[in-house]
Length: 300
Image 1: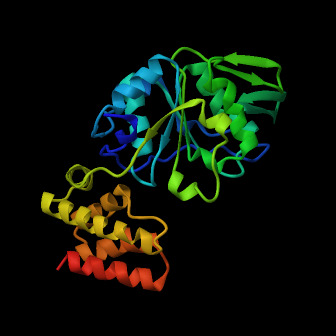
Image 2 (image 1 turned 90 degrees about the vertical axis):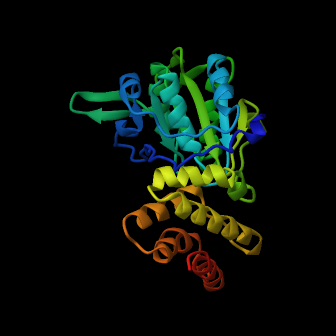
């Protein structure tokens, strides 16, 4: 199966990523975004349902020191896949949530004022390079272009990170791999990566899994009966058909799992779907009414 089909995997909600700070006097990205090799080795296996050759392809990219770019809609499980691969490869994982105020210093590091004077503190990208970790930049297109350029020498054959402020050149340790992700459908008219950046990555295209596979995921992760999982996925299929009618974002597998968990807790299916699926998708009255009608028709 080709890379374009690799994303048909049963992936679940994207994990909470570390947020690189923008305060010039604050530490650069808190360590909760980093899982070291010992944590990975003793941690539980992240739930992931492969669909084709995406696992083997990622492993070969890792072995050959190739950077990976994962493209797919919100909530299709890009982050879960990276977590699973870090566990499978027994590598530390450093996760960075990108945003439009993310600076190069947030990634690389900065001088901080301490009780004993000015000291240098590595940023998450530098720490990952030194540790030989998987460094995952979630929604990379949200970062400024001048920030993204910092990734270039780490994502090609050089595998180095020059630190202009200290004059040091960090050579990436064995096992280091750069992984980025973004939602191309949402960003197409707003932001995009430069060709000089895109062509440094091997790309995996992700999408929502087929109904049977998605039902298995919702059943397992949501803790509901198979029939309820199937009904939620069938509802999602109908709601995704509203994309051409003005719905900016279609319901993700993540939202289906959230609704399933509410149902499993005793909340009525209609109420759970209204709260966990319909309301997060839109504030437009006409679309809300249409989605509520579909929910009511799905759970009679």
